[in-house]
Image (cartoon, rainbow, N blue to C red; front, side, top):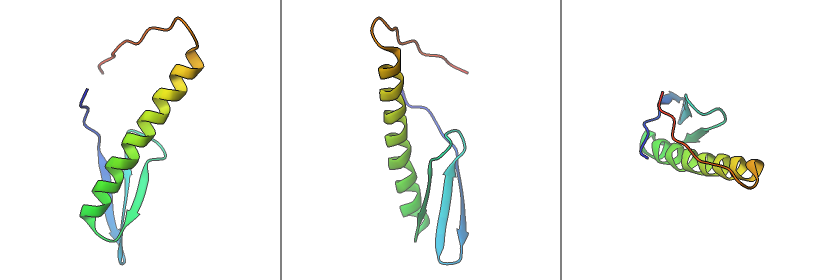
Length: 70
């Protein structure tokens, strides 16, 4: 599944800072806008994978995975 996410970015002095709107805690700071967008993508992928692992662990045995579109 390839879902779009929204990056909110701004330059603050010598740094670019950014957040992913849809996922709390996914934020980064880099020297260039391009590097910031790459870091946000990596951090978002890692956060989603950790969330998946946590959900599967919490569900225990006998769970079902379903896709939900909003």
